[in-house]
Length: 332
Ligand code: PEP
Ligand code: MN
Image 1: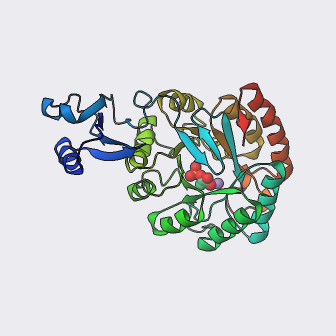
Image 2 (image 1 turned 90 degrees about the horizontal axis):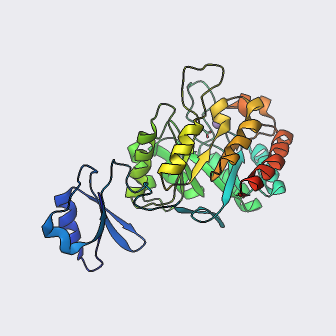
Image 3 (image 1 turned 30 degrees about the horizontal axis):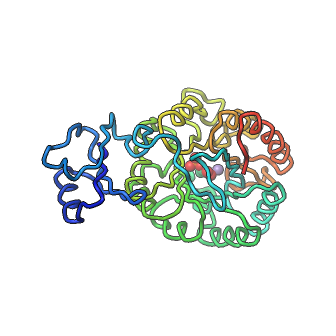
């Protein structure tokens, strides 16, 4: 249950109520909310004088549920916004990893030349093998910040574990929580107080309920700037790397108030399919796509098979504009 308290309730009383209701206190747009377990369905008559309104919730998808807050939450995205009443769809593009100053500069130049505002690249890579490239770490973050400032871009980079979360928060504009880090509660809780937008990726073995509940950890920590990213789930299929769950995206669009972004690159795992999938994603009328692009994909130190080269990406971006227009979206 979400209980919105009256404005005149004293901090002592808020404390008392939150303890007795086993509730998390969340401040939102000047209002004080108590979020209790969703199993709580009624309000004790002795609390009623303190309550402005309350929402009985079906499950622990609470702050993200449209019955609490209809429509989409607005997320500040650099100088732009996504969600809310905006029709913006953000194109997040760039290499899987920051590899060198030269490589990330070429990526930044491509985004700038196409009028794309957001550059992505990982510095702490959650690799499946300890023997492969693990990312440049802090050096990579510094290179990313350098090109961000030089080309006036937003950058998004991922946090892999809590050992470097403060560095990521300091250097990035938007924090990415990767599919493998999605269950890390210390990351989720720190994101709740980070004061920056968080792109939360769905784990490949995660149900939609679990995914949105992970977002609730960030929202209930006081950060309402959360975006959900579907990036493919594991199925019986082996011909593609994962299966992009467009049904799941439709569910998230309808049953949550959070902006939704789709990642076709990690889903299919092969560059040949990324253009068609990207167009399908934009046609869904969601808040954005994440596409991996590399100056020389064959030599990429991670995810080489799925990254588009600059010409392929330029051609794709041109066609995406037409699809976006057809469904009333504006690419940023
Ligand atoms: C990435 O975006 O480079 C990445 C590692 O994605 P995921 O967490 O979805 O595997
Ligand atoms: Mn990648």
